[in-house]
Amino acid sequence: MLSDTQIKARLNDTILIEPYKAKNLGPNSYDLTLSKFAKIPKIHYNINLIKDVPEYYDTTFPLFIQPGEMVIGLTEEIVGVTGDIVGFLMKRSNLTRLGLDVVIAPFIDTGFKGHLSIVMHNISPYQIEIHPGIRICQVGFMKTGEVGISYDKRELSKNIDQIEFKVPGYRIDKEYR
Image (cartoon, rainbow, N blue to C red):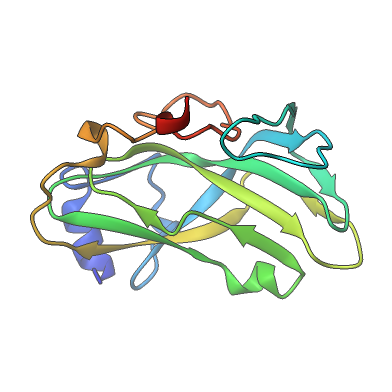
């Protein structure tokens, strides 16, 4: 796992964080913030993962997440890793204590660059008001071995260069389309 000095040394080389804020750098991670863009899924009772693409409402933060409700957001930052680096995402324990379950894809594969999708699920008995700009999760970085096919070259990759502020919804895997 890279330390703060190692992360800073690799910025704009094998690690991209844009915009970068020095105050968000921790001893072994960087706090990512929530953008203002969000999606709320419309109600679906049954979803077939190889046939159904749920519909979503586009909205913006701030908003209240009701108990049991799920909202999809994006990080404000574009994060990218290349070369011998892989990123991994972690929840912030402070938000978990409120009953806000922040669900994230845990890895940032070598070759990925873009805004990261953040799913927030309110598991508490009360509504939670979410604002853009909050520190929503952390990203850490590790050295990896040589990668044969990076994410941006992999045939099955779905989210290549996710650099526009557009919250993605569910996408059927390429092999089923």
